[in-house]
Length: 156
Figure: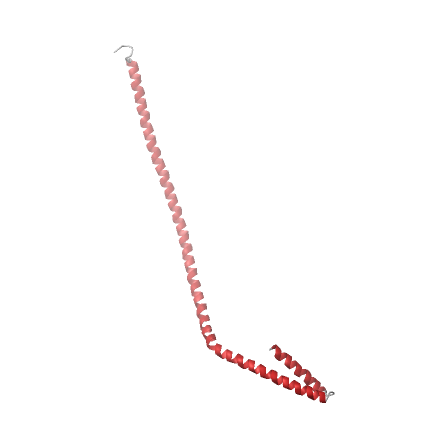
């Protein structure tokens, strides 16, 4: 080994010192990385915890809303059931009354038709009597009213 290529004691000391510094810096870097990792874990943990708290708060709010809506729904169901039940009884009554009402309508129609025929007969009689006694004011009024009765019966 040549004397030129062999490091001197001072150089060896400096090399060892530099190696020690590098080793020390590597240790510091590893410690900082570990600390950074724990910090990011803490940050993640805190964020997860905050997210969980927000979700729990939202769940509570939604639970209250659902409870309120369920109570309102129950109330509406009861109200509409009562309405339906009250209508149901009148519906049954209507079904029972339908034939009776139809019979009444038929009787009413028959009555109006008969009355129209009677009014036409009355008018004919009054008009023929008026032709015989044109100056009789009572017959003039009777003729006028017989005509009016027929007009009213047409409206019905």
